[in-house]
Length: 220
Length: 227
Image 1: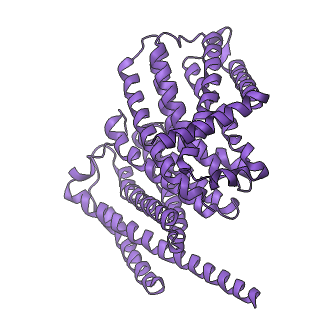
Image 2 (image 1 turned 90 degrees about the horizontal axis):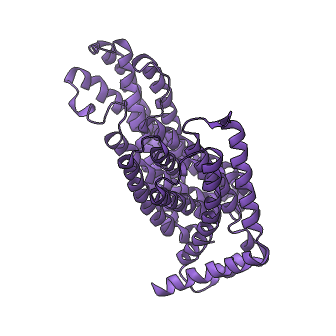
Image 3 (image 1 turned 30 degrees about the vertical axis):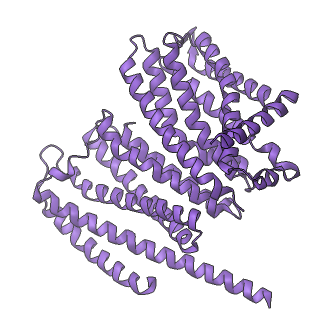
């Protein structure tokens, strides 16, 4: 299934990313922030792709931990890597925007802090998978679920705590001219995320097949 | 339910009995916490006056470091002579074993924190006892949050390679929210003009966080510990 899906997903994301800069350039300049505001289209989309990956990580970790499906474990490790990559994009684009709008590269407000924490958890997850030895897939699944449990705190943080990060109500009230490039970029990132997941899961499946074949060979 | 608590109590009693015989974990953890506070005071106390706001940070960092030390050895005794297998083979609810271990760690950390709070109040001249009950609530909830995650991870990593370095690597990112809430809550209490409303917000958030993570830990202990 993955082999057939991947070329379509990559092709589709290519279309999205070729058209996206055109839409972004055409979008109106925001009054206060000017050109730097346009980074928001990719910044928001990268974070949404990261959230999607973390949800996939949490759910597949739970499936692996409680149902012992090997496919769920393969999906979990792929989702962790994808989440790390998109999170890094968000963490890099954020400060670039912040230094122009807020005057500081980084401030420890709730959302940026918890986003950084999630990124650290993902690094910890991948370190555990790499260096934990046998049995670390189940342990990492437990950690993956903890990562997902932190996610609601990230979302409600800007609504409960006073913070200078734009509150979550900004996006639904965007005028159409800003909305089109935003949702186009969002779709592009989601499709790219799915394409990367597909490719990575396929790699894990091939590794599992190889292991099985080696074991079968040794048994003979 | 009473059987669950009975099993948990048996685990606590076993750990307390073993610990009372040689007191190794208690004394080493206490001494480590004392050294930690002293080292921080060398860094943050200048000319007899502490840097503003440093006391709350030092308190929670000391708890985190001492806690990591204690958690790293929480299941140490079960590693020898196949004791862990024996424990897991017992016909009891596995989460009860987790709760027993958690209570043991909490008791140890309670003693450590009692000493550390007095030391910090003295060395940093911080009015930690001004709102004693609030501080006690904050410390209790924060320690429960930290220890609940730590006990689970410590159990998880028991048979893992490089477990000594992996425990802090896994534990700190997940428990940073607890530390942030603890530090912010403590800071709200020790400022010249204490903000009790803000402290209450942090206490409520910590309570909510504890509920979520203790539940999650109870839920995942069984599948994670199964061979």
